[in-house]
Image (cartoon, rainbow, N blue to C red):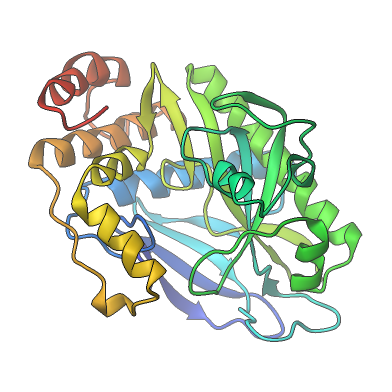
Length: 320
């Protein structure tokens, strides 16, 4: 069970892949807190449908994924593999790659990259940059960043040498993962460009199949995994992050992390205003309609949502 989706195991993974079903919920999570107090109606279906669309389109171009089929609008049947959190086998196969791969096309204000640069944890050259980046600068080529999985908090790696040490993978396999991330980023960029969206960044996960070949896993190219903008409006749960950053709770959470408090001692977040919940629900649904090219939900187009509903929220100070 995860913060926003659950996995129902149909066949356990062993020496070969198993079969599972992702059950997408209307829950959401930010700031590593886990399940937040509100739910966003229709969000689970929108993410599932967008994710399935992406997997189908990628497989048409020869990209291997763990996607099998849609069970329902909010359920996706997938191949599942083993999760190994201790020492990896000498010939890794049929397992999740213990990395989260982040592709960055722009660095927004408050990006973790700027924080890491300011603290001296990394230098521009570690990210393949020739100089210190500027806020909202378009990155060409995009940055491919790596962080851990299966640790208490995600931890970024300074360079590819640290990635190789963490995984035990050789340079060829790490380069293969990086090339795959660039390919996926290009696919999402193209679809976003077709719609007039701006694709800021996103993340993906990979697995190795029974023969040790790379395949895409989890889900990608949705409003939870990626950050998009349309006419200056954030099309992602970044809108909810920004709302909470204006509350005392945001500072309290950061303090709890610094003090390394157990999660059951973290302060509880306040509930969202109903108007904001309703808008974000419609935003997920409308974005899904436009991304997939099918009218899955009876909602306004994004243009109308932004020009009418979003403007009303701006006047109330609920969005920025």
